[in-house]
Image (cartoon, helix red, strand yellow):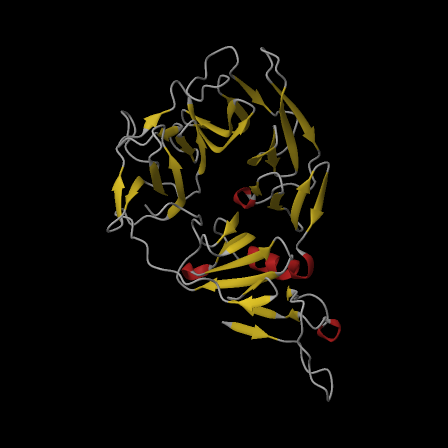
Length: 367
């Protein structure tokens, strides 16, 4: 763990005092406020304290030795709690005493999850968990020992969201074809039906870029694109149940440049990384929040050829509340840098790991 302070400002030295402002790497050191640090490696700024993260305990090694891309807890229709672990190849149900990962079986025609090193979109709906990363058809689990294909769905998608009473899929893969500007939605109230009158498909052909993520805010969904945003709103009109409105259809603009950096938390926060900054979305405007660390963050981004991911978490355990955005950037040789933004006091800090990148971060059931 490392702290770095600005250099001595004279015979009185450097005075460090609250409020802690986190890392500030772009301003000249002579003008940095007393609560700023030029380096704060593996520390958090929380509740007027500078502290380490909670202790991490070993969980379990996946039987297939693949990277973990999602961890999710849910309750089935009978109220039984389940915790799931998704790798690029398999889904596991977790049992405790001791912790064991039990592989779920696949439906006919599916042999694994595609073994593509790409994050999954995962959502809970009707006491089930639906998931896809655009390699195989949309699948779900309902608490049984076997995965199931979502009815008559024609393919998979990189991104999933619920808008109104519809499960919406974006950036489709149907057959062997990728459809990066196409969305498809289920029948109203039935995420396993894609051939009824209320289901449908739409190509965003009027925009010059591709879909890079989806989030829901209130009754609407935001489809993030490389250079802009498309807003989807339920209409209650049977033959046209969803309305699509594009914000920015230009070749250049503020959009979600790095697909898996888009993250949301309820109706309070929507964050993403664009070409020039990290942004918070409050349509019709977006607000830059990279602040005095933007240059260092983008220096790390420019040096990677891996998948950059962003996630918002409310806590680091039930007794450690820490509403924060975690931006993980893989580095050469298997190491990684994760920039962490405390969303309440807007203080940045940084974590580094020599052994791998953060694949999943979630609060889960332990029983």
